[in-house]
Image (tube, rainbow over all chains, first blue to last red; front, side, top):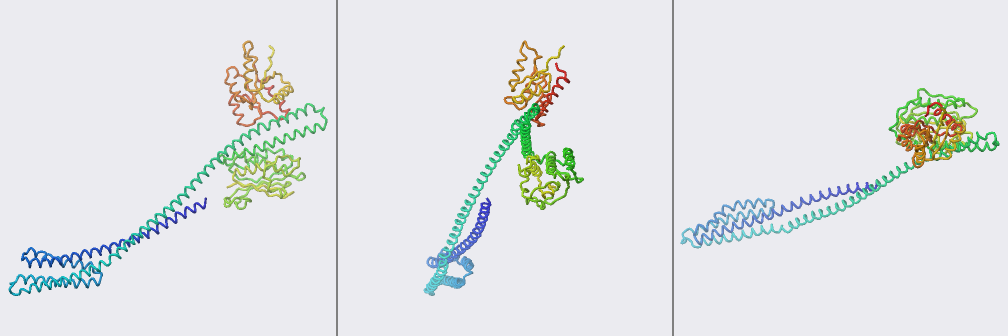
Length: 467
Length: 144
């Protein structure tokens, strides 16, 4: 799951980088293309302007000749117009070519030639208007000079045009190259982005389907768990009502047998009946403890927890066991006051009942039992087996110590497990469920239980409740 | 007028329990007539038979001891039907069951049970229970 998320992030990051890179490249290509386009347009404008200038020069020549042949002023009109228009057009052309030195030189020469051409045209016209008798050749001379100037001008304009035309193929090529480059960049970026998009999308859909599958699996598991809980409830009911019944009857029948035939039964039969009865009692207690243990799993709703004075709970349990305590000549030292704890009253009572019963059960036969109940505040780190989440939490610690027979080191790790009866001495009654119940109750309260013990010295149970 | 015999009807599917209770009643020498039926259908057959024309209502039981955990109809269904019936609702019903659950106790009283007794696990205690039942329902409480 982690690797596919990393893949998604890398995919998105790379595609964003790629898009930015391609965008920058495409923009610079576009600027170059635009510039090339401008240069080309400029070149085209120069050519156009050159054509215009040439056309005006032709008008001058045409006006001159037309008028001299026909003497009609209307033929002279193009000359007049061109004469006014020419300087403007020349200036414009000049401005267009301001950046090229050789073209500028050509322009200067062209201006001189234009002036010359106009001069000769005027002279020719004046000569034609004057008395033809004066000098019939003068007109022709001027016209010829004018023609020569015109030829020279044509040559100039041609050179000018040729120079500009020569630039065109490379300019066009430039423009085409930029266009091609930007197209390639666009196609490439589109292709790559599409590939990345499809790739990441595929991964995303894959991940989504995987999650949906996991979710469905979880739902199925939850349903299965609920069903299994229901089965467990049903099982509990069965154990309470049906497994205990035959045992109860076994007790009653044994009881009846002993009562009714007390005087007639031989001693060994009485002993056997007693054994039968004892086994039935033991089995019933075991079933009751198991039922209590499984029921604890169900009643662990922290919403129902209330603030409880621990002292009153301990007092109630001590009172309940007053007879056994007196019998064992036990001494109880309970710290005053014990802290209050937020929890389930029945479960906490059960917890101290089992701890006290445990101490009473495993006391040393020759030494009066001493039990000390004290409290402290502990940090999470100090608790054995604490999970990392609870390291920085504080806990109310309750120590329940006795001077009993203690627990052998090799059994320490199993004492909270179900059915671990460490002491096989049949004189000491018990089912091996008590401490498992204690641990379950502590877990229901989000706490910890730990044990410290020395064989023949005593045992201390440490209970930790979150503050 | 001579006192009529106190009739107790035991409703329990378990023959062992029926035997034990019968023996316990004998042991305690409770002056009563103990009849039994095995399930929730049989009890109504029994009661209907004792309401037949010719017989009179005095033949109906004076006390019903009812087990909760039975096949076909459970104890609460039987109790509910009894308390709904105009002919049988006056008969006091004592629940005699293995359960100790407070929920079961509450439900039984809610449905109109007169008492709730958990089956003891020793014979002497069972004899004690029959003695107390006899003492209370025959000697202390007035029956008709």
